[in-house]
Amino acid sequence: MTNHDEAAAVRPLTLAWVSRHLEAGERIVKTEALHGGITAEIRRLTIGAPDGSTRDLVLRTFVNVEHAEDGLTREADALTLLTGTGVPAPGLVAVDPTAAHCEYPSLLRTHLAGRTVLDDEGLETRVPLLARQLVAIHALQPAVRPRGYVTLTTADTVVTPKGADAAAWAAAIDVIRKPAPPFEGRFLHRDFQPGNVLFDVGPSRPADARITGVVDWAATSWGPADLDVAHCSTNLALLHGPSWGLRFSEAYEEAGGVLAAAANERL
Image (cartoon, rainbow, N blue to C red; front, side):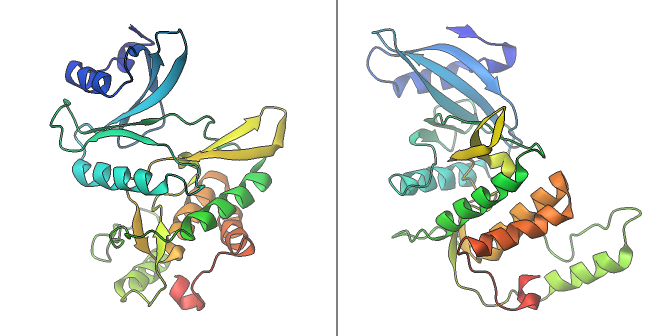
């Protein structure tokens, strides 16, 4: 086995665990660190077969991450549920959420083609694609629902940044201090944003982009569609400007998605 770089090296116990989940005669012939993960170390493993053919798997390792067991268990359940639904998600190969076999909690999944695209060019094409993909995710009706969503912050834990508009922040804090409005539950990704969506897009034809995969299902939940839409809108606004955040919610509804009917509930 050869390593693409030192960061790509798989720890001994994890290496043995991965090897136990390969087909007869297969072995790891190359490892490569993938960049972009915030909560996990991500590696692409090239698997060689006796006939000389290869395939790729992806290893996610949670090092010093709080609630790793919960996240990996939730992701494994989601990937199992998504099989055959038409949502382009990875396939689950194996999971060790408590590090019973590996040095750290780990998940092994199939590799999806494509790459994340965060450029401004081609955004007018990608935003409707993102919206349609999210509508398809929200349309899923699993026999067993994932657990209910949890809030990511509270009114008492918000810290207003230095130099920020104090009045605007105070108004926002007042909004999240109120009880959540009633909602129709949906299957939520809970971290749906451009960094977790893979595209096939040619360098000279950004208008021909297509989605090849949606990854990082560790926060899958059941709750209001507005949560996923607001999260993706925020990321688009931070990446490309506020108008694109607003455009995403419009594209979501144009694609058939349903948000809260009242403006004050959408807050």
